Image (tube, rainbow, N blue to C red; front, top):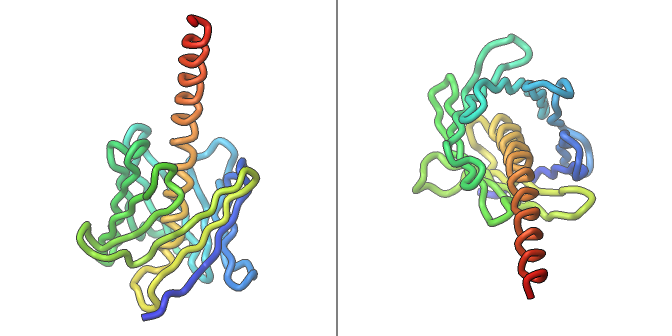
Length: 184
């Protein structure tokens, strides 16, 4: 089976992503309001909303925007900030596991279970001013559009969650180095 590729891009401070195929916009993901928990997403003919409930280990309901029906649920794992993982269950009975890879979490993948090969994965190059990545998927996978959009949404959550952790860590390192050099 051959892989199909979709490109996504955003600026470093934006909360929205554009999805492109052959440099043509085919979808997007963005917050519906500045201080809201609802994320709007589209890809081809798929239009969905992500509605998060809970703050420590949120559950994200996936709503089909056309008929206002729940089509799935994402459950975030307890250690999401440090080891980003989530489970997606759809109303058709399909289950997938999402995880982010690498120390800076610049790639992610969906699997049917822990032992299986990824059915969909991303690779991202990071630049100071923007993020550009590619999502590769097998031709014939069930729920492909949903997995692409949900994977990108989870990637955005990781980015926001770990940004605070990285800033706090950087401040701690600077304070430690300052104390070391002042004590010499």
